[in-house]
Image (cartoon, one colour):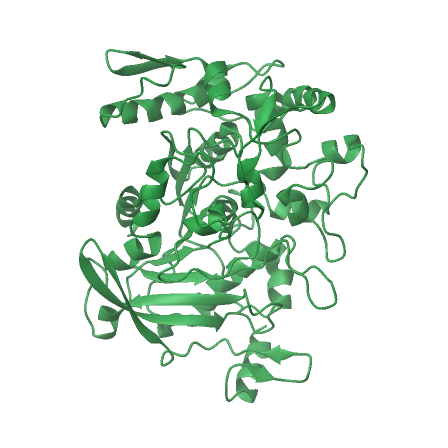
Length: 512
């Protein structure tokens, strides 16, 4: 791999090199002299940064519209100055992605906030029923501004996504392309060593929704050989791709078990509202409309619910006291109470901060203490967004079905259940590809350098996946010995980057 890069560099006098009418080979050498000076205002102070933008980060890109990276560096680092406690060499590298719905994503820029990426760029406003609080968050400084103001270097890589096709109609962004691209961006940063300011061993991934899943996957799968052939194919630098820490908001992950987890939570809720899902898929949500589950969907929910205890019990999860977490065949047990405890903790934080929670009729509060909840009423108040199967749809029209398509096929199944029981028979994705998109298979596994530090958030009114999926991820990491800061965020819908003060305080605390 190094030989390919050296040969390309010897042939190149500029970037890119036109080898022939069909192929271009790009140099992976960072050009520190090609930048613009940009500024932003944060907390009443103006900051200046050097912006190195639209850099192709692989030698053999498939799609240069997305396989690009933007790098932003505080101007002080080019004058031997410090920003906060960091220097040019010790500054962590904040690595946010803009992936939403597993669609292709351009690299984030200094003045483009990711919130609009997640909720649909076409609409411009808040999604249906999105709280005003969330809209106000969008007006504050972005995570990129926070990072730069704290003295971090920011690098944001674009990534291919499920909808991309080349001129021959071949799909070029199906799994695991987007994750491979983000790994290649990490390799590019390390390949350029001291040319790019920042500590390459303090890279912190960050993402929301499907981007949160990508951030989680980066943290779980570091340097796994499973991805090596894909990295070689696109001409990624032959460097390690692990990251130091993970920031993940509402990660849509553990996809091959997400259907049964969703029905364990929402079974018995027989209506759904699909406006948000249409927005995430790039369509017009119009008004959220209430729909009734069909007879087939009700039966499917019942069947999927019975599968979740089997999966949960197979993990042998333990709580902080070392007690085994489990469920019986009906889906009841101490794991359910364990999930409830995170909701109660979120409610208590809200009460302690002075918030009025009296509108939550499912919450039991005594003497300003959240002491219990009616889980069934809570789930009904939250509402169902997706029909069963929620992720591996029988008709293969879910975003995740399209993620697991192939070069020639737009969508495929990725669970044996949906493949076996779908009235409309489709094809089943390759098992290895399915595995490569689930961090649970890689956390602490041989051959993977899993990140030591994890910051995971999920909203208490987020119905995009099951609360159990997030609790399982955090608990599994803790059981494996990793340091995890996990909370359910009170009254938050499907969104991210809402607790940036807390996030960067936590990040500063883990930087050695």
